[in-house]
Length: 353
Image (cartoon, rainbow, N blue to C red; front, side):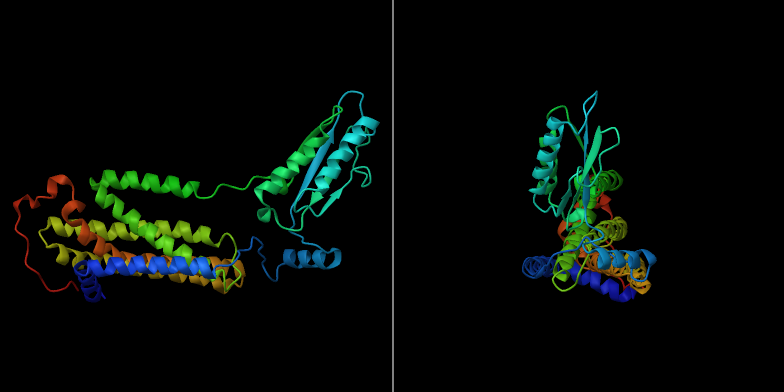
């Protein structure tokens, strides 16, 4: 394998003006496919055969509706000698209930006076708001409309509070990954002493994750995938993409400092460090693909999607990265080593074995 990878690294370095456009074309084609073929993702997931899944199926069959549907509690309170049964307070609560029924995506609203959800002292009560969809499928506008409608009852001394998953704001995605990439960039820049060397692992990792995410978008047009499928693929794609590229860049820099020519150094780097990349990548791919064995659909989809992203990261590290090293030249080294230190370059040798 080392000899094959050695020739692959040399070819990618030598034919860099061909390899780079081919990967760019692949990215464009994947983007076009994602635009034209992608479908909707689902936030629902199930674990077939478990007691909880069977219970939810019975609830849905006997009582109708979606057992995972979002809901909210709109709580009305008064203080002092006032009660929610007073004419002014009751009018305020019923005004809020009427407004809640008009909120988009709301299925039902339980009037606290009809559903008997008023406390014995008459100072606290709540209306239950239910939706036909899960909380993750609610739009931010619908959640805000719910709060706005509930607050119409804040008259005549009535206070309104909210609870339930339908009122929770959507979690901001991507913040953790962005912070991690920035930290990785700083560490790589300090370690390598060259911005080019620090940037190449990040660039190739982003390329791999981009193609992987576009592939998942295409798959949504043919399979029912969870909305969380891309999260695992993104995290693993960034991690292994940076890690695998780091192996090869470090070895390439070492070969340059030993006096090898650029093409030969790229071949030796891919032939040695690339072997570790292939072995590590195959190990991760097999482990992720094994999630399909447990028989849980959403876990199988997440594992296979992440495995595909890791496979792309391996291919990019073995082909695109050597091409980019060819464009970078000796800028991959710190400034103190770019001159070659007067060392004569070594002649080409037989491939590593």
